[in-house]
Length: 113
Image 1 (cartoon, rainbow, N blue to C red):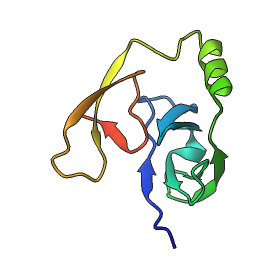
Image 2 (cartoon, one colour):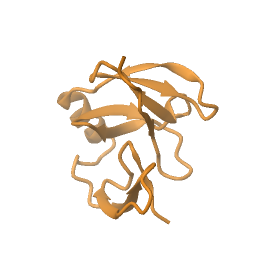
Image 3 (cartoon, rainbow, N blue to C red):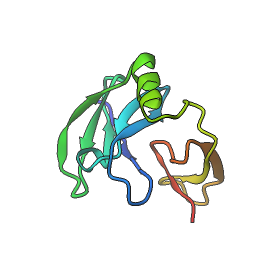
Image 4 (cartoon, rainbow, N blue to C red):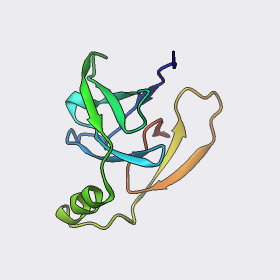
């Protein structure tokens, strides 16, 4: 039985709308109240979403490249957004701080304060 790994999904402060987040080579629509956190599943194309109370709310499929491009196009942005954010890996003591583009930390990372 595969061990499920808890992955935090962090959105911009004050922003409760879903947006594409990159994890393990795929984008998933996460960050809204129904998918604040996610669990990796046995299927690499699917994540299990959890709310703030860590209750399961359902699954979400990985987005296709066309869906990701369409989302960024609709937002008036390109997939290579110039804003950056410094993040550290969740669950790692003395985690190094890395800079990511797009203004949001990827799944498994949190904003470094």
